[in-house]
Image 1: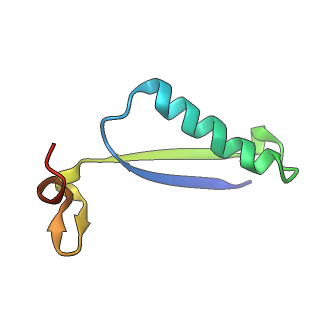
Image 2: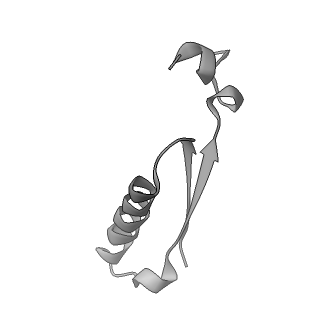
Length: 63
C-alpha cells in the first residue's frame, strides 16, 4: 500500500487539498494500483517553520 507524504506551506483551501489528493491517487491508479490502497497524507507547515537556504520561508517570501 503506497503512503504518500506531501509537505506544503499552510494556507491552501479545502478544494485545492482535495484536488491534490485526487490527482496523486490517480497517478498510482494509472500504474495499476487500486485507489483504496493509496494513502495521501498532507502536512501543512507554516512558512515560519520552513527553512530555505538558511532563511525562514516567512522572511524569504513575504506575503
